[in-house]
Structures are given as C-alpha cells and as structure tokens.
Length: 114
Image (spheres, rainbow, N blue to C red):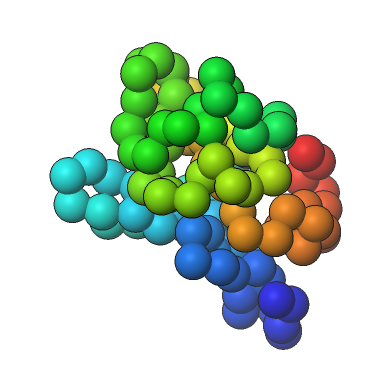
C-alpha cells in the first residue's frame, strides 16, 4: 500500500510502515501492544526463509535472548522472517509480513536494503 508522503507506505495485519517508523503489531507479552521503531534506528534488515529451526514455529516471544518475535499464529506459512538490527539495542526483533515484495519495495524507497 503506497500513499502520499506522511501516510502509510505498507500495511498488513502484522506491520505498518510509514515514512517515519515501522510498527510491529502484537509485539509485547503478555499484553500484545505494538512496538514503534523509528526508521533512523534501523541499522540493517536481514531476511531468511521461514524454516522450522529459524523461528518458523515460534508464535511469540523468544527462546534465544537476542531475538524477539511478535505474535503471529501463521508464521510457519509465511515466506520470510525479517531480523531488525537496531542501533544500541541487544535484542533484535524478528518478524514476518504478509506481502514480502511490497514490504521490501517500501523499505527500498527509504534506502533500507534487505
């Protein structure tokens, strides 16, 4: 979803990307509040295929303290898992989106490579 400047550039049931921030829905546990991440805090975004041992069965939370997964009941059926590397943060959020190509195109518009 692409709109005028200052509005939503990508949105699905899991994430919202605007010109200023990335919002990960249902992030915090036990109450699924979102996490708002300013784009200037993002150092890098990696992606990997969804696999059993790469977090594919992780519904919410973490087994490795370096990574945190927002709530997603359908994660295993998705195409990719994205890992955010944030400035001055130990924990890296790992999340999925519904439409990978549109999400990556919206990131590219901000010169954020995946």
